[in-house]
Amino acid sequence: MIIPKKISIANIPTPIEEIKFDGKPFLIKRDDLTGVELSGNKVRKLEYLIYQAKKEKSDYIFTTGGDQSNHARATVIAAAKYGMKSKLFLWGKDSGNADGNLFIDKFLGAEISFLSKNSFENVNQIMFEERAKLTKQSKKVFVIPEGGSTTLGIWGYINFIEELKTQIEIKKLQGIFAASGSGGTAAGLLVGTALLNLNLKIFAVNVLYSKEKIKKRIIDLAEGCVLDYKLPCKIREDNLEIVDGYSTEGYKNINDNKLTLIKRFASESGIILDPAYTGKAFVGYYENILKRDKGKKILFLHTGGIFGVFGKRRKYLSID
Ligand SMILES: Cc1ncc(COP(=O)(O)O)c(C=O)c1O
Image (cartoon, rainbow, N blue to C red; front, side):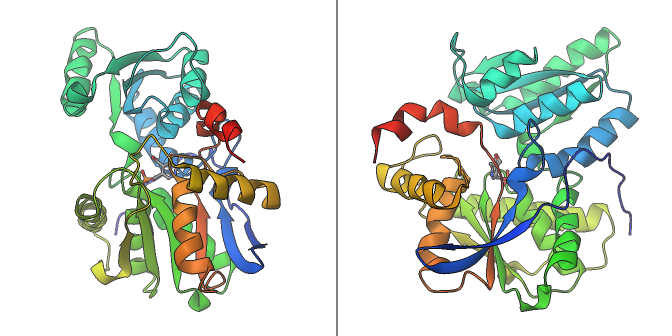
């Protein structure tokens, strides 16, 4: 078994809080508190990816995502901390009035290439071509694919399970419920539970890809990690459940009913969820877990996204 090395940039362990919503108690793990500028789930993955980039003496980090990508923002911050430049390949349009994550990317001086939806389909190829140009100028580039979801990056969530074990009686827990975008978080959780031989169900709310596509991505990543790192475990597909139907309005949009619930949750708990990921996941959690009084058996993982709130502020303010 090979265990990769990492740097230490996340404020971990993150707390687990037991709170009530609509009178129902539940457990929430606050991975939105992994940092301030570096908040959210991506930081755990970046601990491994940035270690590797530094080891390879990289001058540049390239990565990709939507124009409000939390992963891209966290990468820009982490690269700056470690003296590397960053270039982002973002799906969306430039804005002289950049908000949220995009504002921070620009504030830190990241180079940004904006791609149309069509070109974004070939983003990995575009990043590798750009890398080739810089290599000719003797610059080293470390490319991080969407969401930092590689077999190395997902170690952040393999370790998460070890962390959880030190915080609660994990055998009493039946599942972990979280948003799933590129699939790395869920894949890491699956590998982590398999390694410790735990019978925990991973509930993944697909916010970006179809049920079939995200399932395949998560399983491929988890199995790829087992192979790459020679891990003594087998991935159990039946421990993964995709909770579909909570992103029907599309990745970048959210309907008023969901926003109303997110707003009410914020005003009653002091915890802010974002519109693209954790807000949708929480609606799924509320309907499937909380309403059935299973909140103490199935933990809600808050994966961050605070800066995504600002881009939707007009919509947030327009509803009750
Ligand atoms: C706030 C937030 N939550 C959840 C996710 C999904 O994580 P993953 O891409 O590992 O599935 C993301 C990533 O895109 C995110 O930014």
